[in-house]
Image 1 (cartoon, helix red, strand yellow):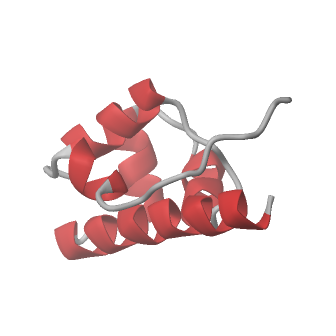
Image 2: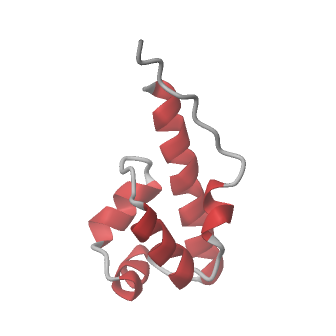
Length: 81
C-alpha cells in the first residue's frame, strides 16, 4: 500500500508540474478537461488512482505525452498465492 501511495503521489506531482508549466489553475484544467476541480486536486495530491482515459484527457489538455506522466514508474505485481 505504501508503494502504491508513493506512485500515485509521483503521478500527481507530474500532473501538477505540467499544469503549472502550462500556466493553468486547477479550475482551468478541470474546465478544459471536463473533470471536476476537486477530482483534479485529489489527483495532484496522490489521493486518486485515475483511469487511463482521464490520464489521456489530462495529458492532451496539458500538451504532454501521457507516457511522460508515468515514465520510469514501476509497480511490483501482487503475489496472489
